[in-house]
Each structure stands twice: as structure tokens, then as C-alpha cells.
Image (cartoon, rainbow, N blue to C red; front, side, top):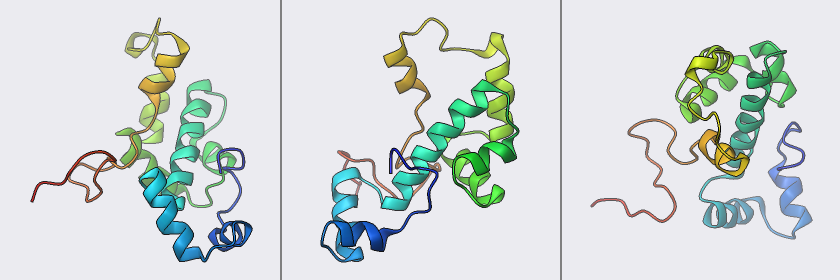
Length: 136
């Protein structure tokens, strides 16, 4: 999924490749990565989209299709959930040199600072980040 993020997700084919049922693969994947295979794939797509939007030579629609999304609406909604702003706003902010709060960071820290927050998408979301306990 990391290499072929722009390809459609076929959980059935992935499961066959590791001799599991699709349901079992999804459960094991969630246990290992803290999110569903689809959620993981969308996070990879949004990370790539962020890089393409920072580059600035593609429109938001072109970026959407470049990363493998087939719906601009779904792409924009998921991008906003993970990044905290719309793709258009992110692109404008990335183009504004005075708004760059990551200038001068080493590349390893820059990558961490700009990575979408998995499992913490929307405020008040239901998913619990890996390693944290839900309050009872």
C-alpha cells in the first residue's frame, strides 16, 4: 500500500496473498497499525497529496486523481479531517513563505511535523489513538 497508494484497494486480493479471510486480515491489520486497511491507504494518499500541493504545480483536482482518489468530495473531506484544513487552504498556506512554521527543520523532523494525524481525524472522533486508553 505504501508503494502503490494510487491503486484501488482490494482487501480480498491482499487477504488471498497472505492466506487469510478479508475479515481476519482487516482485524489483524487494525491491531497492528491502529486503523483499517482503507484508513491506512487514505493516510498514505493524503501524505502524498500534501507533498504535491506544496510543490504547487497541480490543481487540487489533479492532485486528487494523481494520488488515486476517484471522488474530489471524498478526497477533500478526508484531507480536511486529517490535516485540519481544506486542500485549497493547505496549498495557499504552503505557497505563503511567511506562514511556514517548519522552515529550517531537519528533514526527519519536517516529515514528522507535516504528517497527517492518523486516528485523530475529527475533533471528538470515536477512534482511540494507539497506546491511549478511553475514559470510562
